[in-house]
Length: 309
Ligand SMILES: Nc1nc2c(ncn2[C@@H]2O[C@H](COP(=O)(O)OP(=O)(O)OP(=O)(O)O)[C@@H](O)[C@H]2O)c(=O)[nH]1
Image 1 (spheres, helix red, strand yellow):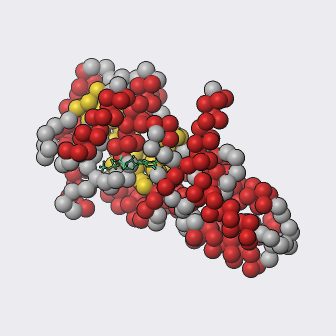
Image 2: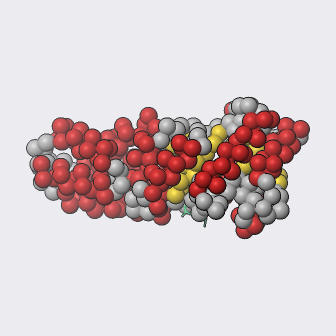
Image 3: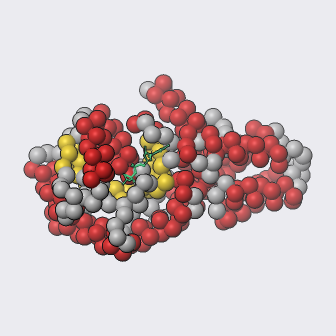
């Protein structure tokens, strides 16, 4: 277990290395002399550049100045203080994803734009759950793209999960309904439902998702038990606009932020976490199955500034 935990932290640290490298270089540059206003301004600018958002950047800089003005500090001390300040921003926004603790079948809906990592995230979750001995059913609700269905089937086979799909253009809500019914009749622990990420237009997509949810509720008024919004960190502050759109129109119970390994601006998780009504539950730091991790605000904050998690 200790070994597993260590591997997990190493993945997080290396996944966030592009972001932490950018920060480490600038921290070393800024904090060469005792802290003065000029350095504080540079710190605030650096945090904004790292996409932490103007509000968090201002709060962190203020706290930093109050504690350390006029003092010198080693690079590690500065990083420790920064990590703590970032963690303080994120700890209230940390949530847990535990589909095996809820009712059965536990229905999870995956939403997000195409390419955000929805299919991959669903696949990784499926593999984790079957690895724990759970009986998992996957429904390929992106019925508009044959390639998406095929990709999901590969993940289902790899995970040893059962799979349901329909011909291209079929009704996604109908598929979701059948999947939950099968889930109930055959004693599944979890039903994972993928959805389309792009239709003719945004409203068309929103209408489709709302229809899926409406139909799902006909079988189980408490379902979906979880609606996970998958956001790609590499799109930067665009992730905020996506959170806004899906959060307001569909309703989201948890956020998954993927591809944090593919950007130097992993700090964007901070404004997204703060703008959203729902907590961050999982993060993706690579393409492998092990690279999807529960969101741990403290470990994330330490890794982001280049400290051992
Ligand atoms: N580096 C990295 N790549 C990731 C991560 N998560 C997903 N990806 C990759 O991102 C690409 C898009 O992921 P998909 O899962 O296909 O995204 P989707 O939202 O389902 O999009 P469609 O399949 O196009 O509907 C794939 O090549 C994934 O391997 C991550 O955490 N890190």
